[in-house]
Amino acid sequence: MLAIGARDELPAVEDLAKRWGRSIFHWPCCHGYELKPGPIGIIAASEIAHHHAMMLPDWGAPTLFLNGAYRPTDDDIVAFARRGTTVEATSIVRVEGVADVVLTDDRTLSMNGLFTQPRTHIASPIAAQLGCTLVQGPMGVFIQLGAMQQTYVPNVFACGDAARAAGSVAMTVADAAMAWVAAHRSTMF
Image 1: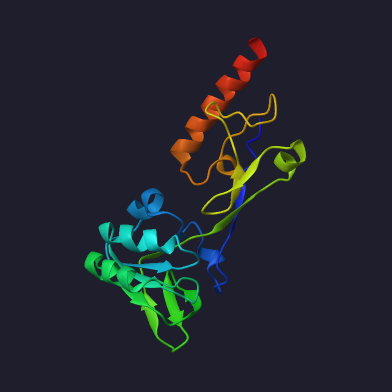
Image 2 (image 1 turned 90 degrees about the vertical axis):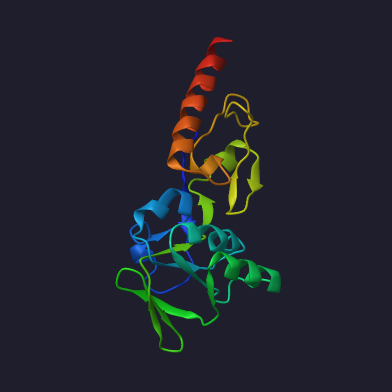
């Protein structure tokens, strides 16, 4: 049973990592409720920033900081404006306070929280060493599984962040239960 997790590779923004999981988050559906209504920042690190820019108006007033990592199309800009997302092209120097974004032009924009799109990396080499099939997902590499959480290596099952393209705590818990049932069943039949 592989439940080896993943590690997040964050954008190279000074002091972002200090706030990761406290005032800077990865996905609105998991953490949007933790923020007070008001200004929410999105630090672009990949194309997934588009999804944040479209989703987060349901939680507050978002600003998408392109930070040289994402180039929206003209149609994207129109769609963002329609949803109420402001686009900021000036690069970020650092994050201060709870979630204050300091820009290269010396402006500081105060946010109630920030979202970004980390790249994920499987936290252990054991899946690759066992010969498990690894696939590239939108956020990084993960272990490819069948319907019952089995890898394509006999008698090896996996769950958690290393075995999902993206997920949540609820999905991970369900996957772990399914993996245990399938692994246990494989010993009987």
